[in-house]
Length: 136
Image (tube, rainbow, N blue to C red):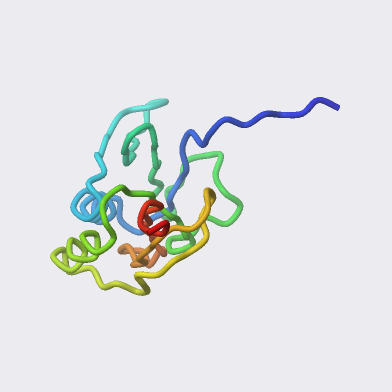
């Protein structure tokens, strides 16, 4: 049996209550770029940063194929930043975003990282982490 060698994630899908509210939040709070485009005759919306893409599906109007049980608020995701976590927290406070937990040291894919947690409009758990700060 041959072995598959994975390289990276290409994209992920968030099922959301409101595409407009989600786009406004992620653009304002995390600086993601909103793109709207047509694919297979349907309007699609996605969020981008670097080489990463998050497709958005509005609950009840998901595109096929989709997850078995798509639902708003079911995501727990970690974003990596080079911005110091204290600056992230100050930015979140300035945006009116409540910090749910942190800052604290956590275990990430590459080792220890310093993180802060908060929630998006669908109550998804969002973690923003910095690896450099956990080493010091």
